[in-house]
Length: 350
Image (cartoon, rainbow, N blue to C red; front, side, top):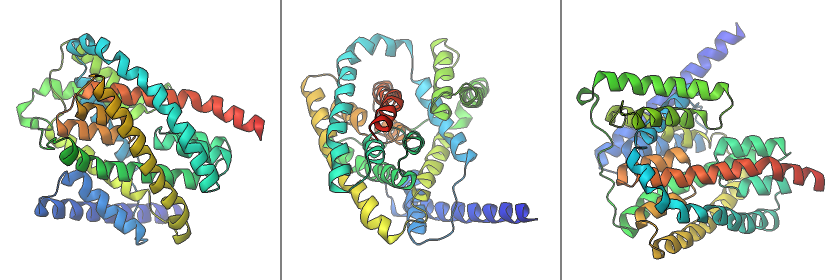
C-alpha cells in the first residue's frame, strides 16, 4: 500500500511540475522572451524549488528528451565536417590547457576561500557533466549535495547569461530555425532517428557509455548521416520538447535548498562561474585572435556549460554544431578520464 501511495505522490508532484513548467512556457511566449521552451520551464521550476513547492523531476522522460539532442548533433556530422577537422586541431589542443587552468584556479578557490574538503573542491571545480562529477566526487568521499548545487548553479547561470552574451556581445541572433516541422520530413527518416535515439541510448547504457542518453544516439545518427540515410535534424517539435524537459531539470535541481546552502554553496558556485567566465572569455579571445573559428562558435565551444544546453544554444544561434560539440566532448572526456586518477591521488594523500 505504501508503494502505491508513494507512486501516486510522485505522479502528482510530476503533474504539478509539468503544469508549472507549461505556465512558464506560455508566459515567456506571451512576453516575447527568448527561448521560451527552455527558459520558461527553467524559471518556473527554479522559483518553485526555491519556494519549496513539492515539484519532482521527470526521471527517464528527461533522459529520453536528451536523446533528441544527441540525434541533432549526430545528424550534423557529415563528410563535410570531417574535411573541417584539420582546421579544428589547434583549437581542440587548447582544451587540455583550458582544463588545467580551471583546476589551478578552481581548486584553491573552493579550498581556501570556502573551506571545501579536497575531493569536494576538486570535483566542484571540474567542468564535467553534472551527474558524472557528483558520482565521482561522492566515490572520492566528497559532499554530493554541495557538488550537485555547485554544478547546477554553474549550468543555470551559464545557460542564462550565454544568450545575452551571444546577442549583445557577438551580435548573434537566436532565431535560427531549429528544425523543419515533422510534417515536412520523410517518415522513413523520422523512423530512423527514433530508432537511433532509442537503440543508442539503451545500448550505450548497457555497455557503460558515459552520457549514454546523448552520446549513444549521437554515434548511431552520425553513422546514418555519413551513410546518406538521413539528411535533416530531428523535427522542430522534438527539439522544443527537449528544451522543455532540460529547462525543468535545471530548475528542479534546486529543490530543498536551505538558506545555509544558499549563503555558502550557491554563493560559492556563483563566484566560481564569474571566474569561469573570465577564463572562457580569455580562451575565446585567444582562439578568435588566432583565426581558429568565428567568435560565436569559439564562445560556445569554450563556455563551460552542460553539453545538452550548449547544443540547444548552438542550434538556435546557427553556430557550427560539429565544431561546438567536438570541443565539449573533448573537455568532458578529458575530465572524466582524469577523475579516477585524481580520486586515487586524493585518497592516498588522505
